[in-house]
Image (cartoon, rainbow, N blue to C red):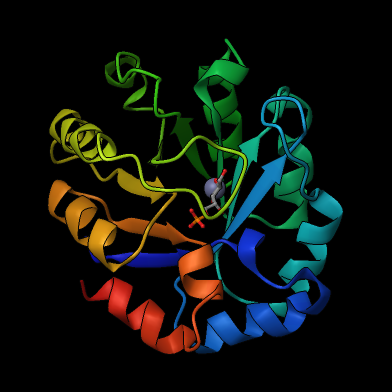
Length: 214
Ligand code: DX5
Ligand code: ZN
């Protein structure tokens, strides 16, 4: 699978969000990563389906929503209705995760599961036929600009092993730069989320192309 780059708008200039989104689109982004935080599952707040709906109107890029919220079941319809293409939630947030995956997929959206740095992969074999992608957190969720947790590389490798030849994408999220992207690519990642590394760079096109070609 080809390496895709998903800028996380969490580190963009929110006062000029439209300009920022069009800039990463023109700079070659493959999809747009949307971090949805509720101040409860994670100690930070971002935005909800209303803003996502507005974003849907200004870009054709696939929208990748990463729900860091306590009750994902309450919001799945709303985000899908707002136009997302990829939808993930954290495994701890709903014991009925299988029914949520089925609901997401039935509505024509890719279903993903997000795994925190301290969360084990034990559940993966049981859900492997229910998901389209795995979102492996390589920082503790909540904030952009944190340092990459090195043991995430091993986690990607194990995930890849379990997935085998199935068409399941592996997305990595947190602390991605050229150096960490190289490590996770070798381990089997195919979607790189990058927030601060892209949005704090002087040249988005160069940074995105550099990540894709590590
Ligand atoms: C953190 C978010 C990430 C964040 C990554 O909870 O899930 O998507 O934006 O930011 P960087 O790339 O700066 O680590
Ligand atoms: Zn994220």
